[in-house]
Image 1 (tube, one colour):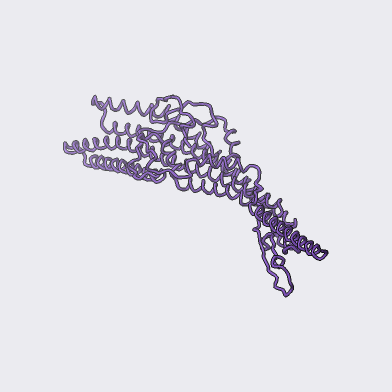
Image 2 (cartoon, rainbow, N blue to C red; image 1 turned 90 degrees about the vertical axis):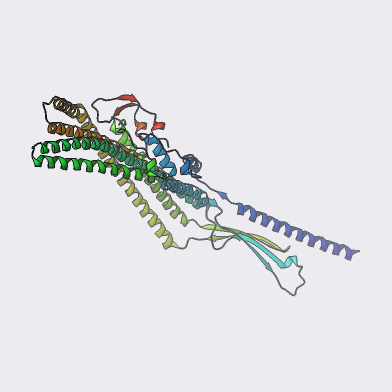
Length: 491
C-alpha cells in the first residue's frame, strides 16, 4: 500500500514538472512571437510629415498619362502649360518618390526591437535514464550578431530619419519651383520670339517695298548704290524674320520637352506679350521669406539631422542589454541577460567627432545659403525694378514719340512731301522701340520667376493688389482684374 502511494506521488511530481516545463516553453515561444512583432518608437511629427507628403503627391503616385493632360489652344495660357509640366515631368515625380522613401524610412529607423529573434534547440545524448522531454533544451533570445539597442538610441535614429525626410520634402518643393521657372522662362522666350517675328515681318514688308522702289528709281535713272543698299536692307530684314521664326520653333521644342507634349507643333504661339505680374512694393517681406525658401529650409532640416546624429553618437556610451530565456525539459527554466559594454572607445569618440564636424559643416552651408539667397533676391529685385522703369520710360515717352514720327512720315509720304527713306527710317525707329519695350517686359517677368524659385512661393502670396498692367508695345496701359493665385499657378 505504501509502495503504491509513493509510486503515485513520483508520477504526480514528474507530471507537474513536465507540465511546468511545457508552460515555460509556451511562455518562451509566446514572448518570442510578441517581440518579433516589434513596435516603432516613431518621433513626433512623422504623422504630419506623412500627411504633407501624401497631399503633395496626390497626383504623382500613379503618374498621369501625358496624352490625357490638356494642351492649351490659347498660346497666352501659360498656366495650363505649367500644370502639365509639373504633373508630367520625371524629375519632379522622382523627387516626390524620394521624399516618400525618406518618410517610409523613418518607421524602419525607429523600429524596436532592432535585432532578430534567435531560437535554439539542443538534445542531450546520455546513457542515463532520462526522459526524452528532459533531454531537450529550448532557448530564445536576440541575435548575437546584432545587439538589442537601448530604446533611446532607436528614438534618436528615428529623429535623424525624420529630419532627413523633411529635407527631402524641401528638395521636392525646390524641384517644383525650379521646373516652374524653367517653364516660365521657356514660355517667355517663346513670347519674345513671337513678338520679334511680328515686328520682323513688318520690317521685312516695308524693306521689300523700299527695295522695289529703289529698283524702280534705278531704272528711271537713279543711282545704282541706292538700289543695292535697299536690296541689302531687304535681305537683312528677311533674314531677321527667318531667324525669329527659327527662335519660335526652338522655344516650342523646349516647351514640348518640358511639358511632355508629343509634338512642338501642338504648342500654340502667344499672340501678345504676357501681362505684367504685380511685384510687392515692400521688399522686406520678400527678403524675410528667404528663410522659408526650399533650399534654406532643406539645409535647416539637414542641420537638425546632423545635430540628432551627434546625439545618437553620444548615446553609444550607454550599454546594450540582450535578454534571453531557456528551458531544459522539466528540469530547468532560466532567464537572463547579456550586457554589452561599450569598449570600442576610439570608435565611439571618432563617431562623436565626425558627427560634430558634419553638424558644423551643415551650419556653415545653411548660413551661406541664407546670404546667397538674400543677395540673389536683392539682385533680382533690382533687375525687375530697373526693367519696369525702362519699360515705363519707353511706353510713356519714347514709344509715343516714335509712333507720332512714324505716323507723320507715313502721312507726308502719302502726300508726296517726304520720301520713302524717311518713312522706312521712322518706322524702323518705332519697331526698335517696340522691341526694347518687349525685352524690358520679358526681363522683368524672368526676374520675378527667379525670385519665386528662390522663395519657393508665388508672388501672389505677398500682395493683395490685383491690378495688372499689360506689358505690350502700346503706349496705352490696360488695367484689368487679376486671376486668383490658384488660377495663376495651379499646383
